[in-house]
Image (cartoon, rainbow, N blue to C red):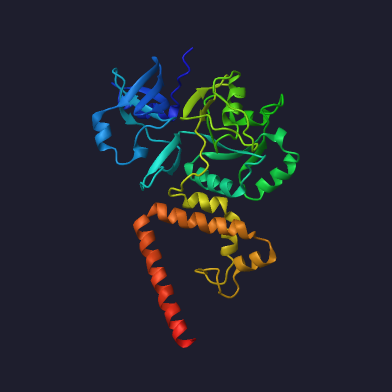
Length: 343
């Protein structure tokens, strides 16, 4: 039985180009794409016109995209995405990269042994909320943690609005919590740092060791195994996307996601006396009061500020750098003036 299925929301779009064949991208490597269509699995590439007209890296097909190709397996169009998980492209280039497209749920995987990191999770959540998919936090390797319940409580302090699940690839029912999101026709992307156990979880869901996995290093952290993104069909009829480990996801236009992730801080800021409060020295600042009382943790506040600055740079690097330079000039002038009157 051919597993390819074009969702109804894409059928009308595909019908506008009856001479082209709808397909879904399952793998992308070095400019070539493995695609699944009613004809089966093929290797495809984008047309010269497509390559010429693409403005950014994210315009090219990503794993999970629905595309239209001709009988020679040349891709002419990427159908509009209902969701897309974006990150800043690696390197110094100021451009975005699509990690996965048309996903219903993003499983944000984090092991609860030595790799547990709430600040990294805040970054992942901010990008996931922006993607248009539902973020779900998946805590892995529960068998290596003496108190998983405590880790869940810690995670819930930063994962407001997202469900937190605990899994173990060793326990018989260690992945049962994932099944509500793995319904027929649904697509789930597994995202997380190298070695957190994404591939192991997917192997359990597939019922076979399809993906290579490695054991733990001497520091109790997993080894990186996945080298490219790939989409798989589960026995349940759901599709999952495995992604390479990404310890740092560069922010890309994630202001809405930051607002969702740090809703507690933005609610506090709305209680400040002044709408444009900088939370530095203004009277009746709710944020400073929360920091002083311990209601708001200092490291969470610093994480929020850091992601805002990084996102501002990603949205407009030239404008951000110009405004930052202007701020430094103003600080320098103030410092010189202060020293003049306070020798």
